[in-house]
Length: 189
Image (cartoon, rainbow, N blue to C red):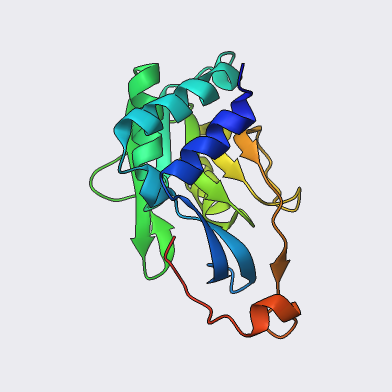
């Protein structure tokens, strides 16, 4: 029987969501690997399966609403909400900062699960956590498909990840020799 990690990696590879090359991450750091979850999100059967594999970790959480940061978390968050039969909202960038718009509201004491596709440093996830707290909601947890932070992302809420993979990241001025001659691209996150 295939392990969950092997099944998840197989889904990412067959949908071309796990890329290899020389990539500029949102943080400005460089990596030889990049998760382009938008590729897997084209295939709803695979998204459905990924969330089915993630949900057992969330079974004990009390959740009223699922919130996802745009863009990466939109499809994943919506599928989590669909499978849990919960309300779904999202936050989006405005002047490079996440904000809640479109008439979305979080009630005082509302238990919110934040869902993201991939975290490396956790910047957008922490912004979403702050938004929930500023609106007097309770963050029930943070669920991600891929945690590539290598334990370096810090959250004051429970973290649930489907896959933990630690690919090295590099400062642009300190690249390994095998990446120096490969043009860096920013595939979008």
